[in-house]
Image (cartoon, rainbow, N blue to C red; front, side, top):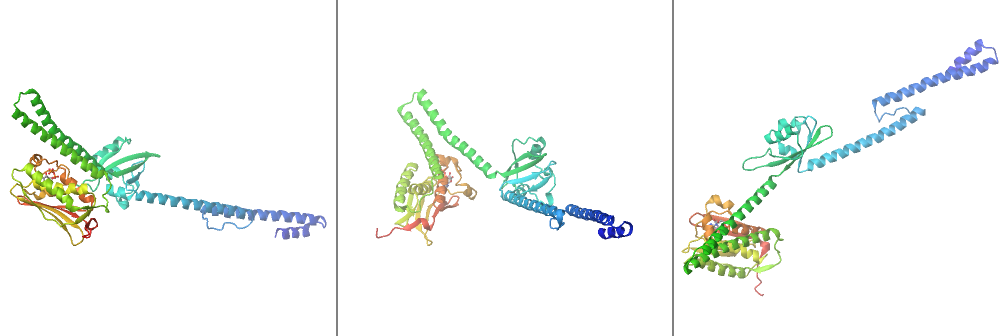
Length: 436
Ligand code: ADP
């Protein structure tokens, strides 16, 4: 169109010859002008497109601006892909934090909750719909934690009760804040209930053992001093030495039971392929029970053994003997001499076996039954001591039962007697082949 206008002007006003040159020049200028306008409009289109930031838009297709659009589009696509990858990684990271058994809470510079995982939700009773952007200190109001937050000394953790904490079922949390970035912080919470209970048990155990050993040692020391300082006749001397021997025996039994327990805790489970004859274990128990009864009581008790014969048990002969004799020994110790004790090993229909010891002794009140297998738990402390008890016998029996896949049950009526039953599973019981 520029050329046509230029041509019209030349035809009319410019002499022939010079007109041809001027005509083509002006045509080129006008054409250049239109090209500039066109180019500017393309550039403006690209600019408009970039403002929207829509990577799917085609932009400009031709010429230099087309090339620019193309390259920008490519860069945008790479950027978008990187963004998607980063988002995917973030989601994976959050999913990993969700799977953590420890609580994780992200707090902003004003201690408001930005994000938390499920464990933290359970630990502190937080609800993701209700509690995001709430001040953490307003939701978790334990005084110890409030002090920790106010002091802002986060080099150590703080212990506090969890949301589900009750008197019968305590829940203890260790909470530690780790500051990062611009005043933000990462709060980690860990359920330490089991660790604390184990630590309390360990402390009690050490205190109990120390107490149990100190008592006979003090008595022994007293007797030694008496023997050293007082002029005693032979009879008195013998009496003191007997009492000293009793105390030494008490300490020996305690150490022996402690060693048994530590062996049970530290050794691999008894084999299911090693078979031991129950008859020989029971014979040994019978001899030891009669001996114990003679030592403890002036008149021997009646101890009846009514067992299936030729029974084989898979496991450790030493452990099984220890468990069986502990139950028989207890029956002997807690049953008066004129009463009887019944020991039974019986095969069961399911292929397992039960070993039970029934006595007509003092019996045990119902409230004590759940705690009897705890270490050093005794119903009657002096009776236990007087008869050589360590308070560890039933703990050993329970351990042996568990290690052999069995279980111990106790039934008792105060004043009428008790029955202790050890059940062994079918895989650990069989009848000896009569042909062998
Ligand atoms: P101990 O060495 O004191 O007997 P155990 O662990 O063997 O320790 O038993 C724990 C407690 O259970 C005993 O102190 C006793 O009070 C009670 N007990 C165990 N067996 C009997 C039983 N056959 N009759 C009555 N009480 C028993």
